[in-house]
Structure formats: structure tokens, C-alpha cells
Length: 149
Length: 149
Image 1 (tube, rainbow over the protein chains, first blue to last red):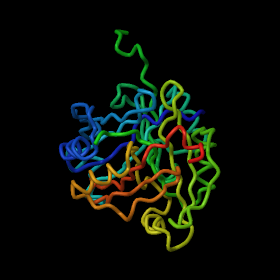
Image 2 (cartoon, one colour; image 1 turned 90 degrees about the horizontal axis):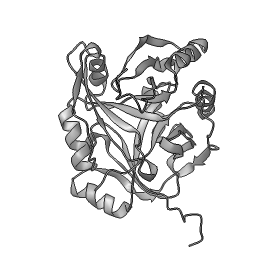
Image 3 (cartoon, each protein chain N blue to C red; image 1 turned 30 degrees about the horizontal axis):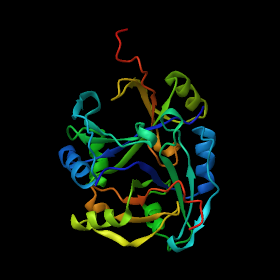
């Protein structure tokens, strides 16, 4: 297992619209995706792009708003009403290999591997097994992902 | 104001040694700086490098351990005993300009501008004015920073 790119950090917010305004107006973000619902996960999300070195893409900020009171983000916001950092997400080349790696280490994996917000397979690791950090592992998007299968 | 590179995310930990082992052994980090004390801030810190796109440097993870019970990290760990995400840090080209920008927006700045862990000027913004996120603003390191003044 080799540490991959920090694809994004997930930030919970009570209002994705307010967070977008904050990132755009106070922090000067220029590229922010349209918010979209991930109904099965009970969240609305969007991505704020940050610049990497030498014109590359940097780590994104994933803004996450609960869709309803059953959302897993709802409890987080009950404790942190203003919102705040919720998880971090590292890329891996092969999601099945990564899953086997963390299982082998005895790390608790939260549910099955599923398709994440970037359209590639992901899973989450329990924060209690990850030094307090809810950690998402995501298969890197492939450059040919826009092509038909 | 233009959004700069996400230089690092700060992660509090009760044990920098345990966190280094976690990042190295579970997550596969290979480049981790030697921990050093920032006595005035009451913390011990080190940086875990993550890869960016195309061989560039990615966003770092700053591990932060309190030096004693007076450390500002001490209270965070009292609430989050395992540790967790503590702040995020964006780069700017000019720290004085950035400070004036945030002051103009009425954002509370926590103390004077000072030299941060990367040797460049930094300041922190109050999380209550930043959608719940303790936000560090850091002047980008210059390529000639190793040269004598």
C-alpha cells in the first residue's frame, strides 16, 4: 500500500449555498461544481477546486449538506452546528486491493464498496481505527472514464 | 483574493509517534519530516507528504501534538481524544494583503501574523467566521527562501 493523492477533504455544512458563497466570496474560489444529490447517502454534495502546483489539480473541498434528518451528516451537524471538517479521502490505484489491505490490518470498513461522488468505487474506514479521522479510500478516476465501456 | 493552494490540513493527535506509525504502516506514507517543537505555540508538529498530480507536491498532513496542558491543542483533544482534523491551510502570495482582505470582510483574526511551521508568515481565522473551519492563511514559500537575505 502506497499513499495516494489526497483527492479531497469532506466538509459538512448546514447550507451548501452558504458554503459556496463563503468559498467564492471570502476565499476566492473560482471553480465550484453544481451541487447534486446522492440520495442513497442522504447528502447533497459539490466540489470546490483548489489549485495544485504548476497548474495541476489540487485537493478538492467536498461540501456536504444533509438531505434530511436521517442523513449520516445530520448527527455531525448536531455536534458542530456551523459545520466543519468531516472526512479525508485518499486515492488508490485498485480499490479491491486496498480493501483487502485494510481488512488485513483489522481496520473496520463501513459498509460495502460503492460508487462515490466521482463515479469511481470507494469505501470508508472507521475513524476509531484511523487516529480519529473518518477516512475515505477512492479508486483514482481514469483518464478514459469519459469513454463508453 | 484568489484561492491558493491547500498547503496542508492540520490533524491533532495525542501521540505524534503513533500517528507517524499509522501514516507509514497503514496508509503507506514514505516521506514524513522529523517532528519539531514550536514552543511558543505549545505544540510538536511534523509533516506527512502526499503526492500531487504529475509528480508535484500534494497537500501535506500536519500532525500536531500538544506539548503540555496549556497547549491550544489540549482542549481539542479533550473533546476528541483520538485526535482528528483540526484546521486547513491555504497559501496566499502576500500575507499582508490577505490579512487586510479578511479584516475588510469583518473576519476575526486570531492574534498577530507570525512565522509558521514552514518558515513563512501565517495567521489564523476564527472558525465561527469560516463556516466552522479553523482556517490558516500562509504566505507561499519562495523558491529562493534557502538563500541568505
